[in-house]
Length: 232
Ligand SMILES: NC(=O)c1ccc[n+]([C@@H]2O[C@H](COP(=O)([O-])OP(=O)(O)OC[C@H]3O[C@@H](n4cnc5c(N)ncnc54)[C@H](OP(=O)(O)O)[C@@H]3O)[C@@H](O)[C@H]2O)c1
Image (cartoon, rainbow, N blue to C red; front, top):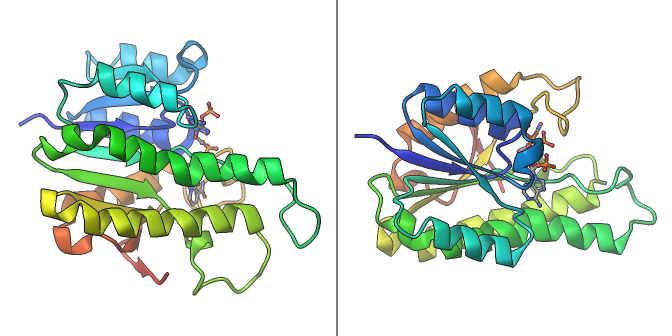
């Protein structure tokens, strides 16, 4: 049976590659991005997908966008709700002055938005076959694996969204919804940079495998693209 995935931040980087691979695997993709008019690659992918990829406007930091999207999708079933959109925050995040406004803006996108979007679309997920919420975390948000210090903004937002995902995994379990937290590896995107060790293709292949094999027992853990459990 055809399954549906909703992906945020689908216009570039990991989100774009997820849209490509899931459509290739015959999934319906609700590809969300904040600027559809400028999403040239996603638009080309959508046109070539034979209707598999449908583009939706969504700035995850805007409550009104989330409410509008939930209304547009009120009759949909969403097998996987993939909260992928994220920002790294200001360039300098070592010990020293950090702009508070930028820090809070990163919290909005990386922490508050995945919660608000999940809340807004929980019925669509609960009514699906797969019933899964995925949130992009990162090893850099692991307190146990923090050996370098610094990264105050990005690290604190991702550690916080790990907690959001853990609570969702408990609160949504009675509805049969599995909440997964994922670490994509260090990936060559605008965020990961050119030195990163993984291509988007490798990372997304791994993430898809993790999601394909996931059972409810995998909910509420931080799992890397290669299946490793990352300690909190
Ligand atoms: N790359 C890595 O090595 C790595 C490692 C660990 C975790 N991650 C996580 O993986 C996810 C994807 O990262 P990436 O490497 O693909 O990053 P990226 O290339 O910088 O792409 C980020 C995506 O998020 C979107 N986005 C940012 N703010 C948004 C907002 N307010 N509303 C809607 N979309 C928004 C961007 O859209 P615009 O084009 O409109 O800005 C873009 O599509 C992020 O959550 C990131 O933290 C990445």
